[in-house]
Length: 234
Ligand code: C5P
Image (tube, rainbow, N blue to C red):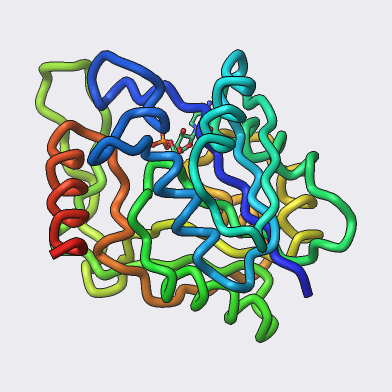
């Protein structure tokens, strides 16, 4: 079986503050996207990486990938993305060649995921799971609220039992045909790919995630990411 990774990297990264699209911002001098691509290419099981660039940024991203050393065993493709993460992933799926039967979807915004996590996801799909998500238990208690206008206190509706909750990460791994079917039939906006498979009524399983697979979303996350890189170098 051959495995490809789709990396949606077309987001603006508004929550990170003003500047370049998030995936192109530097961590220790190297764009986040390059870290993310290398993290995927480190897995010997990955034969193709499809990067989904901002709609008008595909040539720039192609140049960026050409300029950075990446393992020879891995092929790369760059395609333009869409207005939502979902559309961007779909553009990546549409670009997959024949012969790929396992697809991972990995956020460019998770540049530091260790290869063992990537391999764990691939292995679970190879062992027969149609959809696999890496996840970790939560440190915080989570409350469901009734949304109100900004500034007004929000009433709490429920407190799900923390021990049964998981924070999910990427790469999420799929049987290719199942993920394509999910993207063809689910139209609601979702925040991850596995939930589209859940909406089809198909099973999704969890494997251990990793602290270093955190998503770089806010300015503080950049500080943490650079600290992790510094520790790896030490
Ligand atoms: O916004 P969020 O943090 O959920 O973004 C997760 C990933 O999806 C990021 O890597 C981002 O670049 C990507 N994305 C995309 N196309 C969009 C929006 C987000 O590829 N229109």
